[in-house]
Length: 225
Image (cartoon, rainbow, N blue to C red; front, top):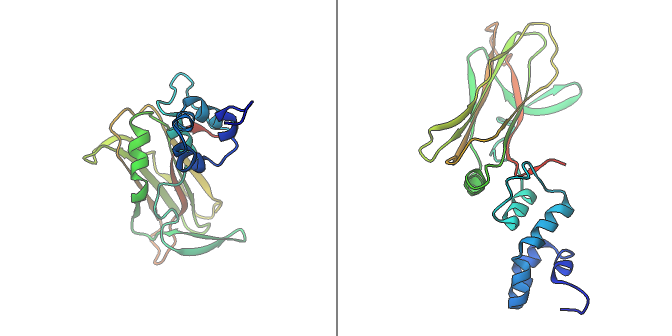
């Protein structure tokens, strides 16, 4: 180790994956530094990853850091079916629905299921669900959403299912956002089921119902900054 420098000061200026996959295997001394709580706590501080609840500190600061860094949408197909519509000069890929009740269930990405298992049980990190929806201006319609946190047997642990949102004919066709954050849901969450959709209320032939897009489910181990 260069004189006058600590291992933390050196490793904090290296890419995190290099610390884990290269530096950690150089010597026992470097391994101790790479595994130290102080290193990853300081890296979280410098990169702006702050705890939601300071009274509940992570058991593993390195795990907390990488969960924050790799935070992403857990939904496999966040824009549902690839139908393209234009709204306010903006092309949007979204799910279109008709006069029949149309609900789309979006599965979570299988490669990210382990993230749900890691975070949901030990740290109880908030889980955020978001959805964008908009009506047509010329047809009355309704929108509904249901997001469920499920246990290992796929039984609901916690459910977000607000009242249906209804739109009248000849109204605004602006996009609206539905957001919910699950907190204090307890141990045992292993899966997330995201269901959304709706229908038009005038029973016209064609795709005159609600439009939904940009759905998102994220595990939020840190406060947004």
